[in-house]
Image: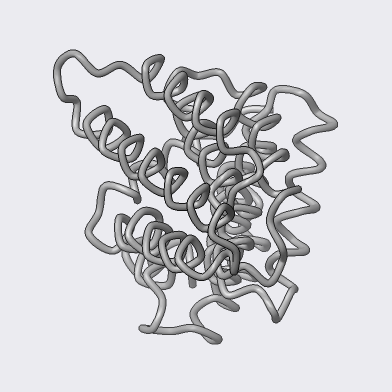
Length: 221
């Protein structure tokens, strides 16, 4: 199935905004760095996590260079860097996050099947109690929805709906936005109103996703 816009690319575009960078990169680095500091009680574990943290930070520099279009840095290079990190530090606190950003690199190369596989691997290594778990689960849902495989598309739709219904999910507003977004792409105006009105009523001005709906108010009312 196709949509009027690529939702994963829109999520990547959101990462270019100040708020998006804070959520998708800044928060991730802060949380991961903290996890790396407190990740182990024994010296050899701490040492391993510290080396993983340094490798991850170095990889993020390359990621942001590619994101800003710096000459000489390709998404293929970024993909390989994160793949190397994920293999070298598979048992560290940072292991899953190498995979998350490797998936991003795949998306930028339009390698959606590979991105889905790596994102599944990353989530399998993260606890639902992780502050970023549901953000990445939402991202997986969008990747699945953009698949040309009907089964994967249906899986993504079901996952996104479950994320929107999950009150433990701190990114429910994001899930509601994309449910409305996909409904709009399918000319399902009843569902657009259902999901976006719910988003506005429950989150209002506290949500960047509600602000995005307000910018398209003709579809939200």
